[in-house]
Amino acid sequence: PHYKYADDRLFLTLGLNGYAASGVENSFSIAPNISVDYYLSANTVLYLKATGGEIYNDFRHFCSITPYWVLTNSFSGSNMLPVQLPNQFDKLRALLGVRTKPVKDVFVNASVGYDISENRAEIIPLNNSSTDATIFAADGNRFYADFDLHYDYRDIVSVELKNRYNSWGKIEMQGELEKQKVLGRPIFDWDWNVSWRVFSTLRLGVGYRFQTFNSTDDIMLFERPETNDLKAELSYTLPMGLTIYAKAMNILNQNYHAFYGVPSLGASFMGGVAITF
Image (cartoon, rainbow, N blue to C red; front, side, top):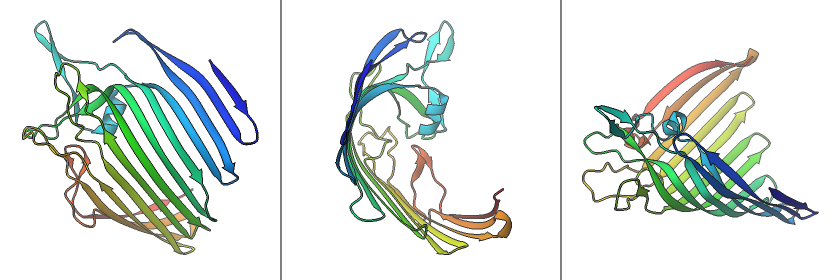
């Protein structure tokens, strides 16, 4: 059920969503469905959202965390079988922010948020087998703050700066008495991209990604190094929809992880041809 209200400045939704599950577990959960947009001016919107809901803990979700995931095992008679995880349920996804266009062609979004999750899929690779990442279900929370800036001038110059700070609460693993640090998820996460159309057929792009992660004193656990990735791309468009491009990845030749426990390639280059029909 929900209630909606709208006028010249205010758009309001108040409601609840129910989620029923059967099979691995039988449950019924409720999450808020609240959305408020208030227009301070034609170019500035103050917004509040409080939602929640279910995220399927299936192979597609696990692969987005790491392609080397494995499930924990349990014994059934004389056989060892993987344990199917219950689906993640977010009791709360709260977000408060402001979107504004302070000057022409510049867009800014600043927000803070707080999540409370049950059965969130987490991995803890071990030092002796870093690519063998076992998936666990864990309960935890997160506070985060975002500041995003986008500038686009006539499809000539485009600048996009995405910045996030995460504060991860300690997670409570199923069957574990002691709460654990979140090791594989970023604390500071900066993703900056600049694109410049030098002339009508030639475009240059430069990107930079920086991430930091929690450290650990446990020598049995695999600590994820910070991400420090500089990349560039150059493309030239010929008639008939033919584009020649060249890319350079990890230009600084840094030792970071594309996925937790999976080292990235060193400095690498590639080129190719793309045809647009």
